[in-house]
Length: 313
Image (cartoon, rainbow, N blue to C red; front, side, top):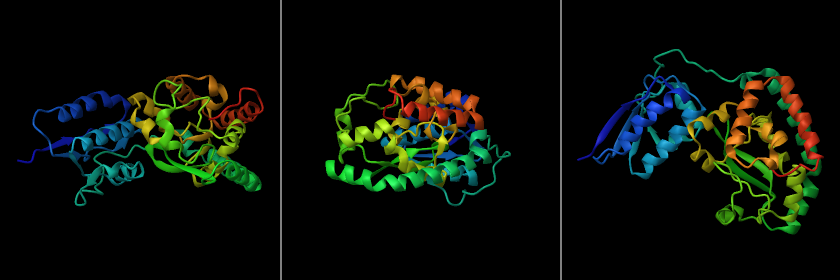
């Protein structure tokens, strides 16, 4: 006989509520009776922050791995949109008859001012236009250097998580061998936590090492900035597998858009050996943010690139 259970989710799925929610949902997965279908009632839910998105991604994946079908029930339009943009609907079947309902409480955007600032967006657009112009001038010599040393595409793309878990394709000049993702498991991670970095990664080509040393490999990301997926200044955009290993509080670093540069790049870079340090820097940026601080970090980034501390991001 098919086992079906319905769970009513809280009005807010954010960091303060996650302890109790995790306990309730974990007990469902650990129940003695085998569960085939779980109905998640979003009828009261009107707000999900970055930590909530990170946790739902982890829970949805765990449920699917156990063979449990997930049904989303009574999703308000903005909640459905958030789950779709975060690719969570790939785990969750949304009931069409109950989608698009009005939220039970007023919608609370609660967006960080760095996300809503028109001045920051204007700075991003202006910087992206200039950056893309420089990228266009450098494209041919960089492309030739990449192709002459290593067969494969000139550009590398990868799905990353942005603001509140929204996924997007990031673009870089390829700095590694073409089959680098398949070789990642052979490389030691020198940073503890949900973060991957190796100063002497053998997958990096000679041209790629120069591109990373000068950060030229990042220049195609000015396109991501122009589109609005990224900002000139923000957090380092994590990969999906990194987000799978986040602790709840670490999801708060996604409350602002990812950036080409940020606190970690100018104040930590190669010296940081713990992901928790990166999180502290990202949260510090959110607390201190203003347009002047963005400009300060941009100028410091230029200085770092010409110093001996410069290294791959």
